[in-house]
Length: 354
Image 1: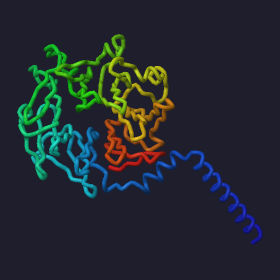
Image 2 (image 1 turned 90 degrees about the horizontal axis):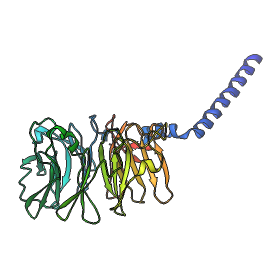
Image 3 (image 1 turned 180 degrees about the vertical axis):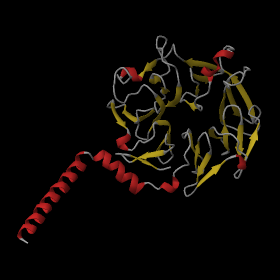
Image 4 (image 1 turned 30 degrees about the vertical axis):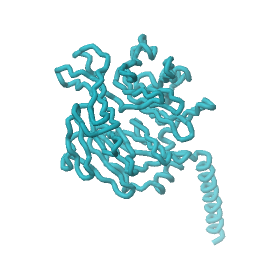
């Protein structure tokens, strides 16, 4: 009995030491533990979107419904339930989600467009929509098509369709470079901005300006161009996400390589960097956010010029952050691929919401 009691005492002491060390390790390595705790307690998996090849677009309509677009479906969240739309609902494409000035929801891919009537979708002629206002849609080039279709920008205004061709030469062998990659963004000076794989175009006063390889200082950069996201911040500065050389800014006069300026290119940083950027947004506090491929999510404070990087340990499970969206309530949504998840940020970690 005597040796058994000693043995039990030693075991009790050892157990206390283990528990104490475990608590201390949890305190010192809180990020990884936070991810597990937040994910398991706060995430409602019943709202998670069906797995697909990535969430490519998000829109909050005038009624507060959230719409999600993927290569495989369009989904609508009304605050309680998630609804999915496919061919049985009259929709046989996926693509960008648009809402016009009348509150009508449209799904378009640059070649075809579908109108939502509250229940089902109906296809309309993309070059002849007579009862919509406030829509701007980029007409793209299909790399698989052997014919040349002039790329440009549809403007639906005052119940008429206006087409503005891009300032491009007919080059049937280089169509991929003119593939549309962004929806229209609107500058403070009324410029309408769109992005293609090779260039960003701004339309104002019946004329286009372009920002491409030359303007971005990439004439001697052998890396492929891949413009994936554009955003106009609260100051009116245009931000460009290039999946080849990172983040660029344009203030109306000068284009700056933001990634190179802050020494965050692939050659500058061995770990996570900003050379493969996909998405950009500004939050309600003026903080800029960047979504990347394989380098997680970054935030940048323009006032202090401080960066923060969030990756797997902070709950960013998706390999690619395709796009980001700010709701009217000020909630940031981060949409990813592999897995196709939509996250929110609680100030410490990212939590999957959809």
